[in-house]
Image (cartoon, rainbow, N blue to C red):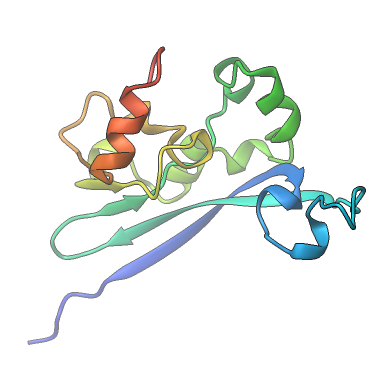
Length: 150
């Protein structure tokens, strides 16, 4: 008997924009005594989710940036440093689910790499489901210790 197939869908959700020095460590890009004004590169930072159809249950890895990012990223610096403006309507999270003919209740697990808004921004989508959320305990403890809504 053949094993049930495992299918993986990598979904692109547009791009945040940022200075690449936030993401990629290159000694030539860092401010130092010998290089007090290094060049910076402003560009796109792709955002993704991964849907895994597995015989034991469907898993979603990360939940990407939320459509209402400008209201939820209340820190003006974050709005300026990581604007999520390079995204089309069909690339938003809920639209990508529809394209795969999926509903939040179709998932058994959500695994989060970490709890930054560009990775966990749509977690509220699963609020009224029986989904199991997988996140490292230290990451979770750190997030709930921050004042405000998680």
